[in-house]
Image 1 (cartoon, rainbow, N blue to C red):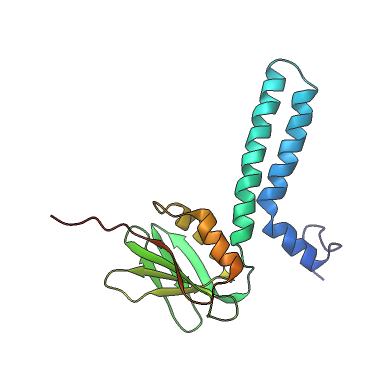
Image 2: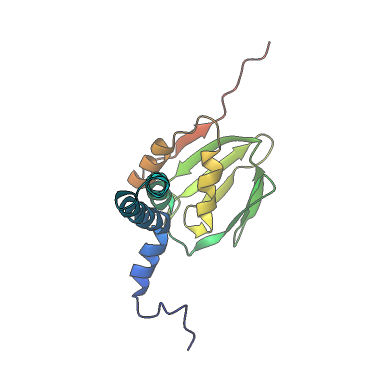
Length: 177
């Protein structure tokens, strides 16, 4: 029997949820400990506690967004981000897109069971990545780096599962002269 770091006494579904919300939990603990530290200290220690409490609050906010983005694991394929490219290794198909050449990000909820991200770039077939593919959470940082992407808009569509494909982000095309 293999034991995983003394966590075998925690039910798997609780362990999975704790892992999904890990940044939020860490940020909350950091904020609470730092607030206690700030309130029970003086001078530089109190200022440091206040600073760490602010960092903890930021981690809570970012952790909530990341947790809402995660769809779980166990879906088809594996996602990697390497040297400016999103790479998807699927069981039947796969491919890659350059982050800098990305023109459109769509969410297609009709792909079962969990929906799929559709990443498009000029001159190539769109890359379809299941939202629950292994390591698909790395796409959060890729999407967050896209100029003009509205994170809350993306998370709302991901949570509410629209009836049809929806554009999450599209590169602004400047008119040529």
